[in-house]
Image (cartoon, rainbow, N blue to C red; front, side, top):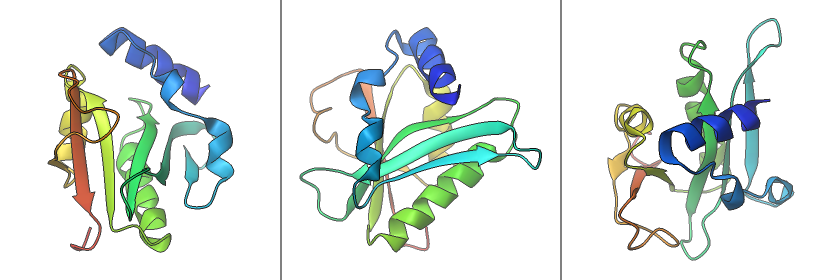
Length: 140
């Protein structure tokens, strides 16, 4: 349900669902974590994942991050949980890519300590991409 809602939302905002850039089966590999946020009644609120970023030692890539608009605070809680898991797995930073046109996502991350970074593979040269990162060793 959440992954479908995420894909539908991304398609409406950016024209692409982003589904082709995420392999759920790979989440069983070391250094990966897929998390689901639920409320006290067990209702689904959000999801997100981290995985090793190939070619960038010590960097986790944040993938498929999504929270229902009606779930105030779930997105932040989920992000902090994934950052905690990344730190426990030995990562020193979390990087992500989103589309420039998805200003809601860009603002969400900027307000939570993420900073613009140089584009990383495979997003180098893609004008529609904005890459953000957060150093986990700076109290993050």
